[in-house]
Length: 249
Image (cartoon, rainbow, N blue to C red):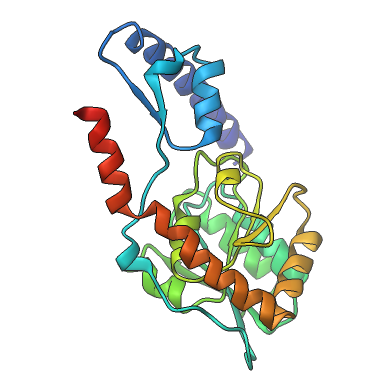
């Protein structure tokens, strides 16, 4: 398994070098214009790819707000708290970190995991090793993730590197406060104590404490849920399309 990880990392590095060369060659063409989906990507394009400033536009990704929009949520009188995470099972998304967070919480917490990937079985085994089968629910790929989001209470995210984080916007549109580690691109999305929380340290105990702190304050939870829906509005596909069309016209 360790050999597979090393091989995969080597492939990713080679692909990155190839893509970097490809982008630089494309930039020599006069009609090429780049779209960066986050400030982190924008800075990378300018500094690492040496792209001319007039050939790059910052335009974050979008969602269908009507599909994901849910009512303001409340945490009152809840005997069970549902945490939810969405993403492929790989080293970067690091679902094992979320399992370690769950270990710091009591049995009233459930963790719902959506997605597939090469490390799915590895994570499933880790859940068994920690005797958390009753608290971790593997949903796999679902046709309507918005339904899963709307039925949960908090969106948790542990990616080590994130170009943007569209799943976070979808969760916010569903009224879910977000608690996340710093993946780079998702820094554009989370406004501390307004629509969620971002932890710089990859410390499961600190992450768990933030979850407990949030659910122990009904007022803060409801305020943040309301802010999340309002924040997600500016990422609606209608706003995105109008800005995108201006680049092509």
